Amino acid sequence: MSIKEKILKGDFSDLLLNRNNTHYVHPSAAAKIFESIPFEAALKAYQTLPGKNQVTVFSYLDPLLQKKIIRNYSPKKSEFILNELNPDDRMMFFSSLKSLEQTYFLNLLDEKNKENIQTLLGYPKDSVARIMNTNAAAISQEITIEDAILHLKNNYKDDEAANVIFVVESDNKLIDDIPIRKLVFNDTNKKITEILDGFCPSLSITETKRSAVAKFKEYDRDVLPVVNSENILLGVVTIDDILDVAEQDHTKEIQKIGGLEELDYPYVKTSFFSLLKKRASWLIILFLGEMLTATAMGYFDGEIQKAVVLALFVPLIISSGGNSGSQAATLIIRAMALGEIGLKDWWFVMWREILSGLSLGVVLGSIGFVRITIWQNLHWYDYGEHWLLIAITIFFSLIGIVMWGTLSGSMIPILLKRCKIDPATSSAPFVATLVDVTGLIIYFSIASIILKGTIL
Image (cartoon, rainbow, N blue to C red; front, side, top):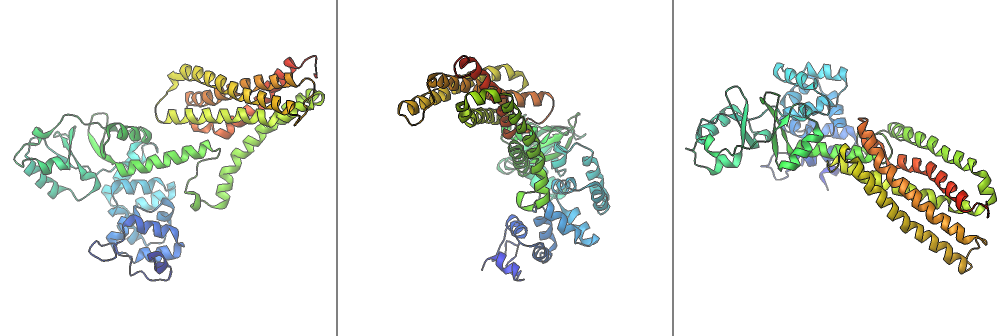
């Protein structure tokens, strides 16, 4: 029987988080179990854990379950958990609260933690201050490695932030960083200054989380220091928090590209009506946009009545334009997110996508032309005596619509970025809807030129 099944039956004997026990369950695994079972069972199981284990597991829980558990705890128990959390985990919890709840739980913190949280809450939600661990381990460069190790043991606790030690001046200005391994593998009589490499990338306290993700990738670091404008060491950001940021950022981006508002909680934790609300707003906007398609077709009603055969290719035409636009939008949004292109590259992107659209349009147009030719000559369908002109119309229409689709899909994200709007808002459905409407205008305009004097 699995641990999850035992917990559901009220047996918590295997839920042990001490490595000396036979049945060791990692805190992250315990958190996943709690998140997958009814809340009442999860709360009972969580309460059976020793105090320190409750703190450890709490940091692995999703924000929604964290809030549910802490609300069901007495102020005294809540005070213990919140004060014992690592600073970055504590900050993430408070960032997920609304203002009234923040005030209530702030009053449960000791003075030092309360002051720290209040300071960090003053920074923007997307700044690295919101994920910073203030337990940065610092030493002087003039002491020996032996003295440094003794200083760390006496003044700091075992913490993820201590994987890298920071060398500072007397006023706490950052000089350099030292991986713990250098303290282990060097002669203890050496001075700290002898093992410095003089290179220490850092994050500004006002820097965005997205920028921090890029720096971690660029410098291949597990920990980066956070400094203010005067280069004073304020704390550190660790790789585990950066991975969480990257995952959240990518999730929100994908949701926006898919044509819905970003979810506040994971899909399975989002209530039905909240999910409905998040999806409905964009669907309504897109539906109103698609209504213009009917308006456009109504405008060309005369052409359609004269040449009903043109209506056969409407789905083909508008889907090709929408698909090419969605492709271009996805490529450009992702390239911008990775920093591969910026606003200054719009000219390069435009010409690249025009050439791509022209090439893709010729390919699709040729396929459409060949298809009509084969169907006509094999007598699978009779397009009439002017079938060749219809085939030519489809050929040039696809070129024009695919070019317009790729151009729109590539330029809209850049335009939104220029207006300081998240480029991901230019979702694939949004671009497809825009190209659907304009694609019909392009299609029937080309048809009226090529088929004038014949079937039109």
